Length: 67
Image 1 (cartoon, rainbow, N blue to C red):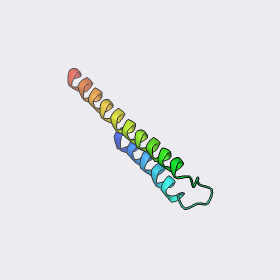
Image 2 (cartoon, rainbow, N blue to C red):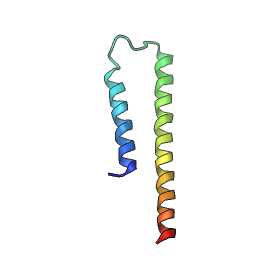
Image 3 (cartoon, one colour):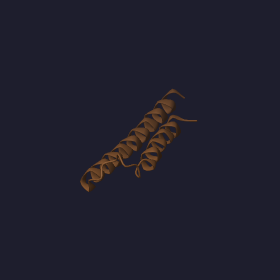
Image 4 (spheres, rainbow, N blue to C red):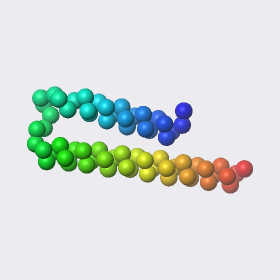
């Protein structure tokens, strides 16, 4: 299993856990708070994908120069 897969699985597990907690009464009921939380999650997902793609590119480049 590659680092990309592990990163994606960890992020998905975290997201699924957050989705499971949506119906809990201790969650913030303010719509603005929920929107900000989802924006932060989206930014985190985009950052994870960006770093994963960049690291894969660097790894491929390094492997091609050594072979």
